[in-house]
Length: 136
Image 1 (cartoon, rainbow, N blue to C red):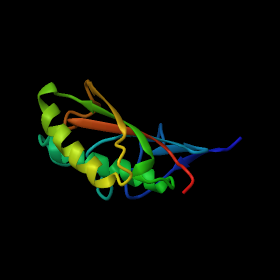
Image 2 (image 1 turned 120 degrees about the vertical axis):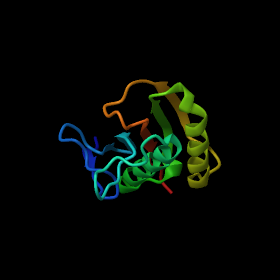
Image 3 (image 1 turned 180 degrees about the horizontal axis):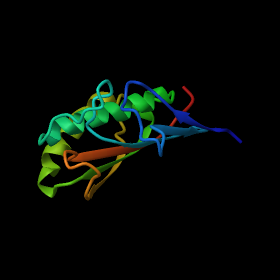
Image 4 (image 1 turned 60 degrees about the horizontal axis):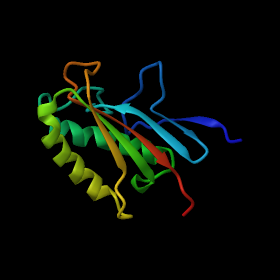
């Protein structure tokens, strides 16, 4: 049985003391929910701009996926949490551009979108991911 390891990278925001940026166990990588935070300054970016927040958030997710030894093609599921239903189209356009650019295998990850409240008022979006690392 393989060990569970914490995934850490300075290319994504530091996690709160109560959870890891990501966890890898065997081929499975779970990325904790990420927001539009600058990893260098820990500041929330792009207030009021859900498209820019979506792109920044996905960059943070990708950094953790890569720190776990995976690629974006290993991502099988992304969950998107939005605060405003009206932001769906803008989020979806930014999400689609990012995911298409970073998917080389032709199969896009599955996705769920949930409308909910988020921990910080300036957060319009939060995204988590599940990846399965395959032999190459």
